[in-house]
Image 1 (spheres, rainbow, N blue to C red):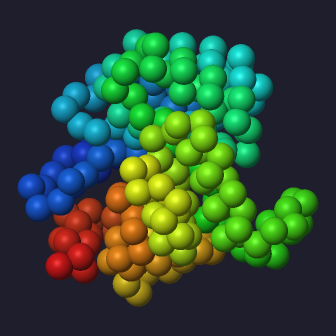
Image 2: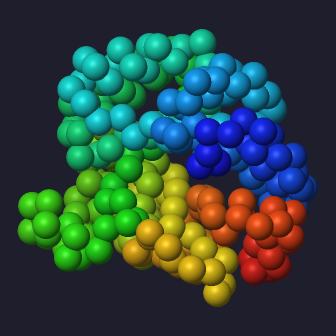
Length: 221
């Protein structure tokens, strides 16, 4: 739900209701930073909420950030960047367990907007797939509940840890534009590669949401 418009969020939730697939709602920085975002988030009931804050700071600052979320008992998933390091992830996991035993922490690996050329420009020397594997092993060491990665890396990650959840963004319905994403694939391809869940934004919320949900269900069948 990449919007700060609460009316639009309500419409997304309303128009995606279905018994045919298991749906949750990912709310990110744009929504959480908005004037009434946090307040509205606290009122969402009976839905799986994925709070995509991508925490990345020194361990104590991240722990303090987690503590500030203790009143939001409806959050199922929370993200942090694996690049923040082992100590940060350990601190986040430990603090999360204290405030909400049901809260799952997901480690974000290399963003799906990165290409091989783009990752080199920020100083990495390894290929993306090798970086993601290394980061997944670190997330596993920190006992995170899962990782966020593109569908291209999901198959290799499945071999590293069969117990971790694999959340795959950069998903587009067949024929839809990649837009600002680079490493994209279809829902069916992602699940075939080992994803346990997928993240879809524009392919669902742009245009007729109800029709897009039916296209998604049809593509998976």
